[in-house]
Each structure stands twice: as structure tokens, then as C-alpha cells.
Length: 370
Image (cartoon, rainbow, N blue to C red; front, side, top):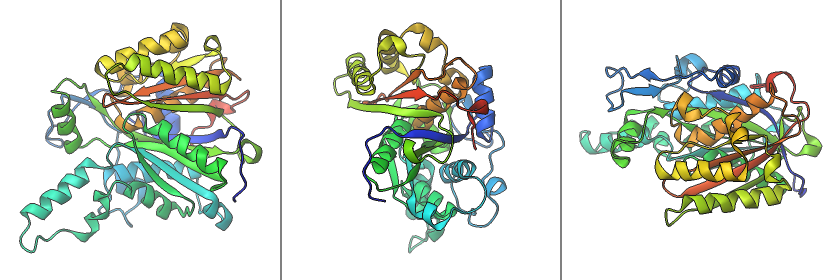
């Protein structure tokens, strides 16, 4: 498993649980239809300041995963475990596959709700501050990735990466390095974000009430070396680039990242067929879109719907949903062999972009969840 490789890896499968529905096919259909998922918030269930949100319809951890081991499972973990299960398919992996499969998950903070619930219970509970022991793991940021590995029998490297909105790109990049250094034979990589009372209020106060509605969900991809891929490739991961904006000049920083990604991938700007900005709120998002339009073109951007308009601000799952959207569209557009550019910015300063080359033959509908 320690064989080094420098060839660009390929994405060979994916699935998503999103406001469009409970699997990758629902996500792909929603993207192609350009369907908005905004709905009024039921304040009897969610005591939040939001009037609207984009929630996963009918999401229930125990209904998706069964009663065993889910009594205290939080929403973040349930979304990740269920999505990973769709990507892997039924049954446990063989011993070799289990040892060789890494799992990399992007997040913002893990579950803010679990962290706050645990902290509150430790402060207001009767002495000696009785806290439900089963809740302890869910207050830790990496519990979702760990539970995915345990639940599905994966024994390769297990990593959580907290970079906010670009987390999906961060996870893909980390998985690529694991493959390149021979530490894994394949990897599952993606990102997750839950909707919760805690996240809503944090978002409300941090954005002074002007952050816009929130969404949620998870998207996970199978990443394999091109030379040993076990499934039909959907796209090649040509490059990922990361920067940090420390002075508010997001336009300059994202231009630098885009130029570096195009150069590394050997792609000229006019070749880009699909381009997806993250739609981040405020000046960061406006600068990002302008930079992407300059680096690619408006036509490439117009081919990918604005995900914020459809499923709101999905937080750490945003970039992963952008990648899933590009793969969904590539299966029905004349995109064979053409490049796609995905950018992501977080108002807190994180900047990232990913460059893909779409497959010549992605198979029927891009094979979400297969």
C-alpha cells in the first residue's frame, strides 16, 4: 500500500443527502430542474430566528439507519453515515478493501448543537454534574468521520478537516495526498453540515442577522488512482489550490488560486466549460464571482445553477454540493472531456478552488450513489 503515485486521481462515485432529497439521484434531479427548496421554518420544532430554511425532507436518523447505535446519534453524524452508506453500497467491504479505504470528512465545527448541549448539561445538571456518557463523543469534532468508519467497517486513515465552506475541496485534496503517498488504495471524501438551533443562532449573531437562510446535508465522493479504479471514472481531479485572505481583498486572492490551479492542471481559461462559484454572503462572494467570471466566462458560470438560490447556505457542505452539481450536469450536457472549475470562499478568510476534467463517458446520469 506504500506505492507512490503522481498521476491525477479520478472520482468514480458519489452520493448526497440534501434538501432535494435523501439520495444522489434526488440531488441530481433537483439540480437539473433548478428547483428551489426554501420552506417556512416550523418554530414549534426549531426555536430559531430564521423564517425560512432548506432542510433535508423527511430526514430521520433511526428511519435511515435503524435503531441500533442511533439513540444518541446527532444530525451531523447521521447525515454522514447515511451518505457514506449510499456510496459504498450494501454489505461490508472485504478485508483488503477495508484496510485500504481512507475516509476524509470536511466540516465547520462538527455539531455545534451537540457541543452546546453537552456544555449546558455539564453546567446546569445536578452535582456531580451528571452528563449522559453516550453524548460525550458527539461533542467532539471528528466523531462523524470516526462513526462512518466504524459503521461501515473502514480501517484506512480517518481524517476530519475543518475549513468551513471550502471543506469539500479540502477533503478531496487530502484524500488525493493519501493516494499519492500510498497510504490508501482508495478514499471516500466529502463534507457535511447540519441545520440546528445552535447553528442558526450562531449564524444570526455572527452575521448581524444578515447572513441569509441556511441549508444542510452531506455529499461524499469515491476517489481512486486512475490506474486501479474499480468503477467508471466520472472526472479527473486535476488540481486543488488554497489561499487565505487576511486583508479583505478576496478578489486578488481567489484570482491567484484560480491561476495556480489552471496552470497546474494544464488548462487555459477559455477551455473551462462549467464554472461554479460558492455564492458566499457579502463582499467575499461578490469578489469571488467577479474573479471567476474573469478567469473563465459568464457562459461557463451560467451552465451551473446558483446553489444558494436552490438550497441556501449549506456551510461546510457547500463546496461538496458544488462538485456534485457539476457531476450531475456533466452527465446531461455536452461536457465530455471538458474542464470544470469550482471555487469557494468563506467570509472568515478561507479560499479554495478545484479543477476537474470531466470524463469522456460518465455513464448513465453520472451514476450518483452507485
